[in-house]
Image (cartoon, rainbow over all chains, first blue to last red; front, side):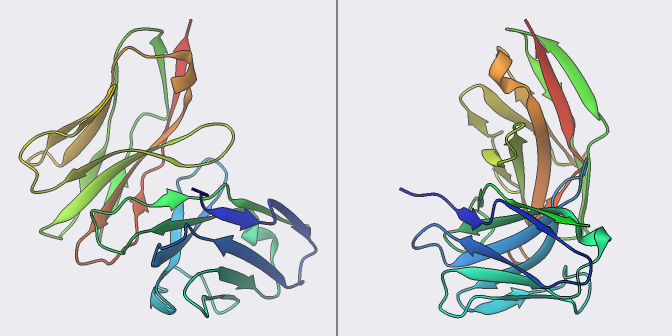
Length: 115
Length: 115
């Protein structure tokens, strides 16, 4: 079946602008995760959803970052007033459930560049 | 707090030989899961292998095996019979059963397989 998809694959934006990054998880997966990967680093957790609700948003760096998953499927990560430090690859992953034994399947990522 | 440490920024191995990638972890969770992911230059994270903290046997998946030493808090990945296509970044990650679904990643090890 289809894997996790993310759009756009690349996004270049000017400092101060608003951006939306979209994630389409694997069909039937109830858990969805967002991570951010800076150059040369491992992915860093941002937020995860179990169904429609954000179960843990402790990784969001500040209130400029927000994510939604209104129907329990597609999720959108929203970044307001972008800063150059927001430049990174944003990875989305989904799993059957949020339980620890379930592996997470990752999408190809969105490379965000803030100029 | 949870932490993953990968002390080898880069490793080289000759094709067809075995290689061990090191991973140590720290957690206060009594139960947790350990994961290894491969990230080729294309950027997508590929799940390789999982080990539960209460699993009695070390996990194996084809050419991948996990050398789990709970007392030492280490979860090293062993790749047997290395292939040129194994050249990639490798990330160790963990998830505490009491931490919900989020994965904590290490810094990664870049593996280069020489012909």
